[in-house]
Length: 72
Image 1 (cartoon, rainbow, N blue to C red):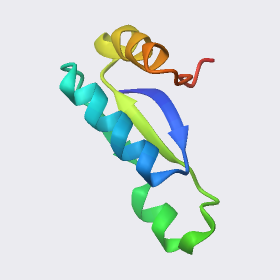
Image 2 (image 1 turned 30 degrees about the vertical axis):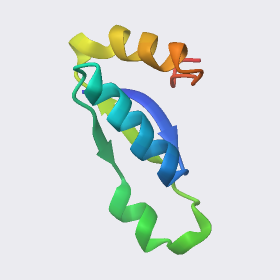
Image 3 (image 1 turned 45 degrees about the vertical axis):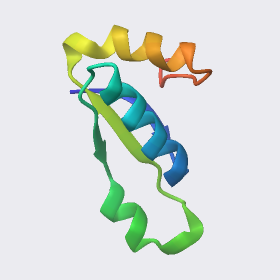
Image 4 (image 1 turned 90 degrees about the vertical axis):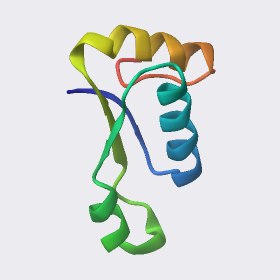
């Protein structure tokens, strides 16, 4: 699994994961529970991870949607 994006925005997170899955890219969200434990201050971003072989496709999908992947 490779890092695609970090975000503290739960709405954006849900939308991005749905967008990726609609395009056939299986996305996994890490650090959700850690973020929740910290409360609503959103100090710890969640990580969106994708399989290594799908990383370039996922980056393209994010760019086309106006988002910036972790690599910039």
